[in-house]
Image (tube, rainbow, N blue to C red; front, top):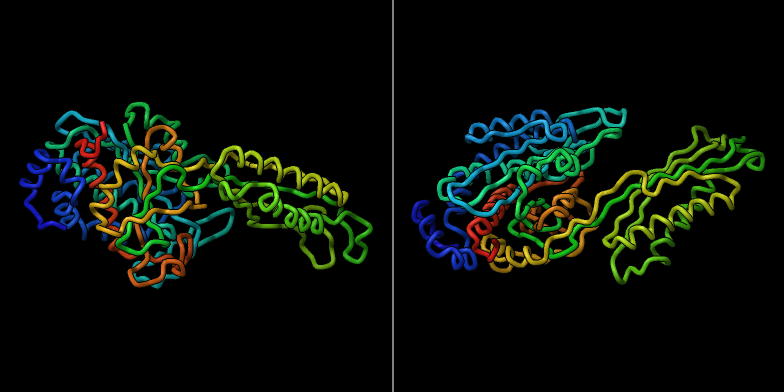
Amino acid sequence: MPKLLSLSCALALALSAPSALAQEAQRAEVAEAAQRLQARVVDWRRDIHQHPELGNRETRTAKLVADHLRALGLEPKTGIATTGVTAVLKGGRPGPRIALRADMDALPVTEATGLPFASKATATFNGETVGVMHACGHDAHTSILMGVAEALVAMRDELPGEVLFVFQPAEEGPPDGEEGGAEVMLAQGIFQDFKPDAVFGLHVFSTLNAGQLGVRSGPTMAASDRFNIVVQGRQTHGSRPWGGVDPIVAAADIIGTAQTVVSRRQDISRQPVVLSFGAIRGGVRFNIIPDRVEMIGTIRTFDEDMRKAVFADLANVAEKVAAAHGATVVAKVPDIEGTPVTANDPALTARMRPSLEAVAGAGHLVDMPLNMGAEDFSYYAQQVPAVFFFVGATPAGQDPTTAPSNHSPEFFLDETALDLGLRAMLQLSLDYLHGDTGAS
């Protein structure tokens, strides 16, 4: 990293020789802002972590964000997609428009990290009282974007273009029976009044060590679809299985045969596919064969034709196998509209890689493999060119392949990731707005 310059000198240098600065080194004003904001970002993250809220319930978090944006002199819009918050920063000079997104929701997970600021919150989820935890790192995403907003506001006079800050609820999915997340924010018009030229997002990730950034051009995270299969049999006593139709045996046969949908029906040398059963419910007593079994699960794909083929094949397996057992089936494959593939725009990704390399340092920008996880950032990426990148969360020296993963009750964020995430998002923003990477 070059020796820190004063903010005024840094800005003058950025305006006089922007391309060289962006391509070769971290911007001096990025380093200065990160150093100034580091402690505040950590405090915000710990506060949000200690007070997590489930999707469409992020009222405290949304208020914290909106109050901060107002204090910066912005005019936030609230209540978008239930609890979402947006605000626009207009720079002092003409230039392009970008959107920066952070998600705010937590998960129904009981924390087991032992941290002094660990969550003790509970909530009602699917009719049950559950623990609530920021087990995926959205507390980090929110606090990082709060810091980026403060840094960019401080540069407003010299800033070319405009920035839309998007603080999104319900990325993990809204409660059953509700709508939420990125798709609803877009449906409610956040890109209508402000159509960005590009959108950027980040995710802290356990499979990378702190100090590493990761990015991939093109398809990055999988499409995610849910399915629901109900097998209808005929109840009978467990001692007289011939007196009814056993939906448990039929369901077990469906689960086994469904494995061939991927292993024998899809060309997984082309793109990976996952079909997983997540829950099976049926029966209440050891000696009663029930009349009904319900199965739910997930399908992950990267190719739209493969996605549709898996839907059809799974529904066909469920119907034919159930019939072979004398049972009937209702197969909803998928049961609701799923999340599409998250794809990074290849041209934009190529232009912005130098920005990520500048803040990560030589050898610390990782080419990410395909990720079978899903992200509703994909909806923004369908609207405008996008780059979604990853920030290492696992402490240096710890094997990230064995570290507790995102969504684990033991998921642990090395807080140096907050600093790197802030610098990366700020560098991307400034390089794009100043046109330092060839963006227009």
